[in-house]
Length: 180
Ligand SMILES: [Fe+2]
Image (tube, rainbow, N blue to C red; front, side, top):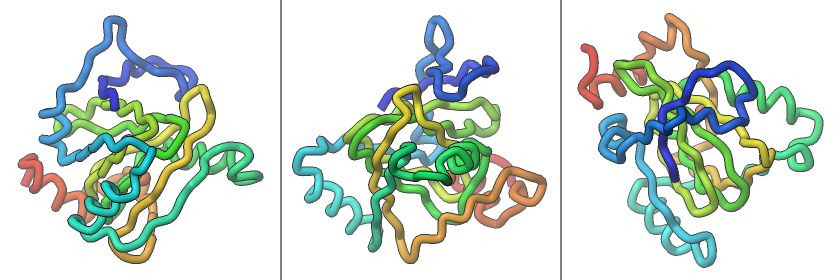
């Protein structure tokens, strides 16, 4: 998984949006934001993913196919919704089975966007309370395993003055040592 600062140039969200020259983000920066990642080859991935799921208490999972063919009529509205800046009250866990895409996570306290370019074999965990968004890239397809601690409840809370005081947001800021 490649991580770099998003260039903030207006235009198609599916383009790489990499500065020239690129501004890579070092692993310790992601670690400080509590963003976790592993690389697990897709061929025979089950045992390794199962081991991490067991260790971290992810009991449920499903597969999501984000593509025009996979989503049908809701495709356009879903794509738009995924790219709205939001947070969840639970971790967002994804293992990429095929295709590719971009998760953008907010660096705090700078508020810069960090772009995570995910590919097959990438397993990422976005902590509860982190502001983030997702887009496909120009290949327009990704298939991923979604892992859940309990029942799937992937309610996105779009960023607002309310989410700034959401207990899960506050808890996240405390965990990364920013703010109160
Ligand atoms: Fe999300």
